[in-house]
Image (cartoon, rainbow, N blue to C red; front, side):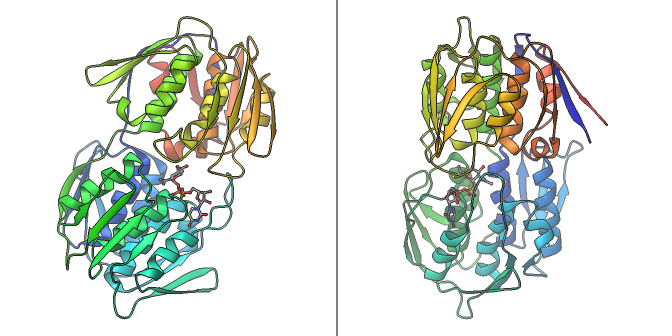
Length: 420
Ligand code: UD1
């Protein structure tokens, strides 16, 4: 099993190029099920999850082929030959559920495995199912699979989400593009990845208004066609490297980083005493004085993202004074606390809130990644810690971060990936 080895204490300095967003790429790939035509996606990140979605689509009959030598441009195309999403793939990647809406819209049936347990909390799909039910789908559970059917096809509906779920918004949107009539989705999630999905669907011939707001209206069309779409830069990867610059007292330019997608994160960095300066094609992040402790509450976009919570906890563990972090999106997203404590962090948590009492310095140790974002929180802590830190459980990191060791080493970090 590979590990990352870090000798901490070096300020980062240089340029980090941000990749395309994983959480945009996955629903965009699912949109490939909505047409037999060629859908070309550019700025595709090199990540394990992209390979998983590729395998899932392949077994539905959709080929996903690289168009360029580097594999940054993928062409999707072909007819759906199978409407079942198997347990083996869905359990590996929960975003597999995003094939449900497109399959129901195009084939009037789908069999998708229930994803099962998850490391960061209970993650039901009831909102996905209820939304599609309002559009005329009928679901039954059998053998661990959700069996959906809509013999009359999907019909437009007025749907109010009780919680602005990202995945449910995406699934309903994907389905609504080909439904009969108008769908109005209220309390829709407003994450930039959803705007990116809508932009691509419009390029494919979908009729959508209210893009980027909490009320999205979709007028169904009989068919969609091919398009070419560039995937939005990854705001979570951007925010993560901003934390890397901050925790090491460095100065890094985040090329392609979209500051406009990181309002709450940039505000919080500012409160911590980190300088964020917009530039040409990105922005720079620099810290001179000691970090200052702050309070953070995770919320749906445009609030502070849950996917940045663990990285901020690492940063705040060396800030001056106490910080309180409250997690409102997932019910078990403090798994990284015990690992951070192994590096000397002083953190207590109860329920949804954690108190972080900043220490002057962390010290290196062996730790284990517990989930995707938690894995990078340990990398950040390792970058700031004295001595050597080794991080195991890298399959989490590989799901969502493209060549992190290389990107950090290019800015002066003493970091390497070692096997065994
Ligand atoms: C997406 C992101 C993930 C991010 C999350 C919240 C992708 C591939 N993943 O996940 O990185 O952390 O948004 O920003 O884009 N819920 C229900 N019922 C449902 C659906 C969700 O109760 O049917 C609850 C979940 O249990 C969770 C909360 O809603 O507590 C947020 O989930 P959701 O916004 O759906 O996140 P995902 O789409 O799974």
